[in-house]
Amino acid sequence: MAYINNEIKILSPATVANVSCGFDVLGFCLDNVGDEMILRKTEEKGIRITKIEGYNLPFEAELNVAGVSALALIKDAKPECGFEIEIYKKIKPGSGIGSSSASAAGSVWAINELLGKPYNTTQLTAFAMKGEALASGSEHADNLAPVLFGGFTLVKSLSPLQILEIPTPFELYATIIHPEIEIKTSESRAILPKEIPLKNAITQWANVGSLVHAMHTNDYNLLGQSLNDVIVEPYRSKLIPHFNAVKTESLKTGALGVGISGSGPSIFALSKGKKTAESVAEAMKNVYSKTDINFNTYVSKINTQGIKILN
Ligand code: HSE
Image 1 (cartoon, rainbow, N blue to C red):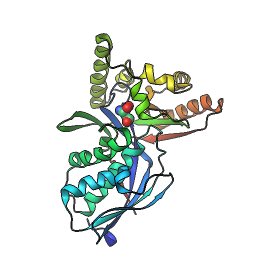
Image 2 (spheres, rainbow, N blue to C red; image 1 turned 180 degrees about the vertical axis):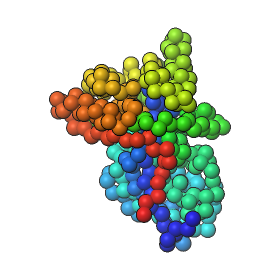
Image 3 (cartoon, rainbow, N blue to C red; image 1 turned 135 degrees about the vertical axis):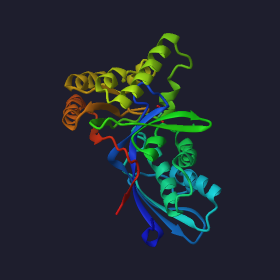
Image 4 (cartoon, rainbow, N blue to C red; image 1 turned 90 degrees about the vertical axis):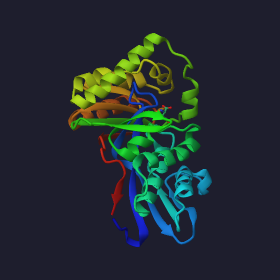
């Protein structure tokens, strides 16, 4: 595919990592919520970030997640040209729906397109992990993989990097509420125990296995029963005001399951059908409108495509 003026405009989507029981391995991709980015080939080699709108982020490529991942790619590809990046940031950093991953994945995906696709999606994930590491201090792929592959993904291993694509039941919708409080990923990782009881580990891996089985067999009931996290949620939920009320009310309204999106503060629910997902959004709003915390909600089909080219 050729791009006019060697330029491409993309929507790099938000994502939900962990998906309750799959801490650091599972993730899924949201639709219509994401950062817009324009990438352009330049005669001058290297990476230049020429515009950032939405949030105050560094322009130096070495200090910006989109820049760092792009630099990792061009270090390997050694192209005859350079690239300019414009970032129209819509996903608030620190919201728990993969803000840094959208930027890190978007730049490498777009550069790969402009270069004629020399790299496969797993290779792009590896470059993007360099940018993600700048934001979170460690190389995760549970948000990056669903941006780049779309749908639900499972990071089977980081070394070697191996990512599995999990089928998405067609009627599955996500509801997200983003309470505007700040939770740093590094802090919400620091409160987690280094060791866990075997009993909890057994419950958790049974849930991960049955969640993946439910996705393959379109078994919405099993999917709901599997969306439980006995390891991380008990610690992190304390950082999110009204988490328990949001969970209880969403489940009462018909959500299949409810959990913390990534490291929070966003909370996600999965539902069968858009109508239920919209009712769940109302239930979530009802909880937070009684507080003085500002919030946003989104209802989204699962985005099985990942990054999209915009006209
Ligand atoms: N799996 C990561 C966490 C996602 O929950 O800490 C946020 O980077």
